Image 1 (tube, rainbow, N blue to C red):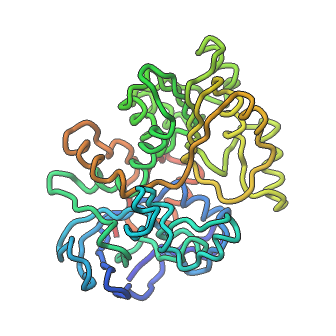
Image 2: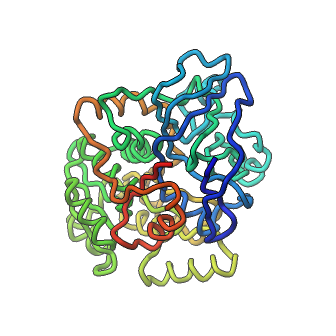
Image 3: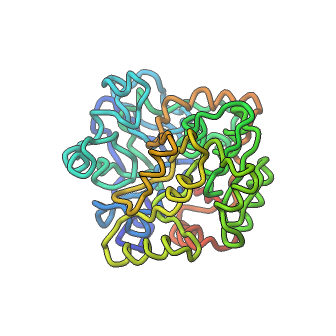
Length: 389
């Protein structure tokens, strides 16, 4: 089959690789009909995520048609159209039973590597390094889906691929980010990053009753999409974010702040961001945490900071004293996707949201290397790339 493979920092290629096979009775094989490039994939392209190996197949936003099933998968049948959560979860361990699917205790065969880096191992993830399981991703013609009796959700004929695909990650991720922000009716919510996750966080925050959403970015197309979704906007390359947020909130600060950026924050020339970039270039730090710093300083006293943006290692000079003395709550994590797929699918079917709004660049799988670079470099108005094999 054809698949998008990682071969080193800045080097992804579409290669011919062996087709996946059933390896366990709870496996399924799906023929990919639609997949997408995620902002998290750019952390792999840029070399931030450790334990990648040349030839690894990328992609964790996947859907397709079931073509083969293991003997213990009774909830699906051949020909079913399904979306696959990016989290691989057993459904049986203590964490899965608590609804914390991204913390699954059993699905990372390389748990010792993750435990050494993090203290404990999270769940295995599709296409996201050997530290997190070494599972092949779905930017390919076919995908092996472990724990297929727990993860995939059937898609009704009334819902298109472009509407359903983002149940695999960014719609639940934006929704959980808003949920973690502990929004009360009428609250002001500031969201850093108007990429795909930020766009869904904006719409989710408003669905949860936020009175105002203030979205922060510098890319014109992203800011325009945020405004179309009901947000006020701040262009961080044109104004000081802290000062502007104070001005708009009578110096109190936002009730909640959401970091939908993650470990490659730009900061547009701010001193701390420049230092982060220099340290990362010299391998003295792994993550650029400008947004976390800015969110901690900006959030009102007693407020909440939600972090769906992906971080991979160590951040430097996080103002923990400010967070403590202001009485802030921090909530974060990889998304418990299986918890959200059914209720969010119901919202799509009810017409409450059409997730396809975020798609700007449909392309073929063979175009993936070019589209990765366009997405990374924010060229041609790219916000979300959807690939079809």
